[in-house]
Length: 65
Ligand SMILES: [Zn+2]
Image 1 (cartoon, protein in one colour):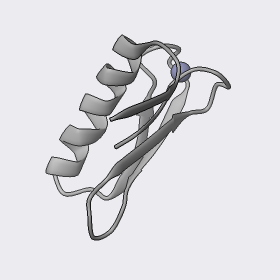
Image 2 (image 1 turned 60 degrees about the vertical axis):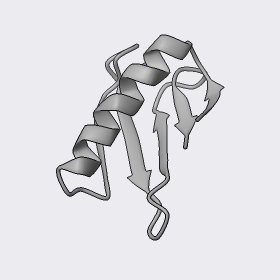
Image 3 (image 1 turned 90 degrees about the horizontal axis):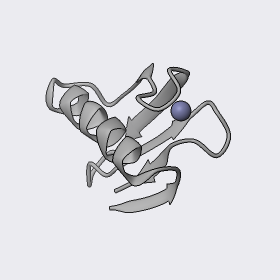
Image 4 (image 1 turned 90 degrees about the vertical axis):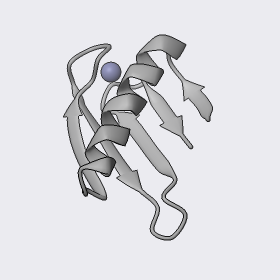
């Protein structure tokens, strides 16, 4: 997992939420950022299932796995 920006714990929390949504069958979506409550968009790459996510707030959460 690569933390591109933001606090590690906030990124991990956001990643866990995206991972749960992916397990539930979604391939993309958004949820309130655990760090700032702004929308955080995520998507799963087709094929390898890698997760990408980015908070709407600049320099907040951004992750990729
Ligand atoms: Zn945020």
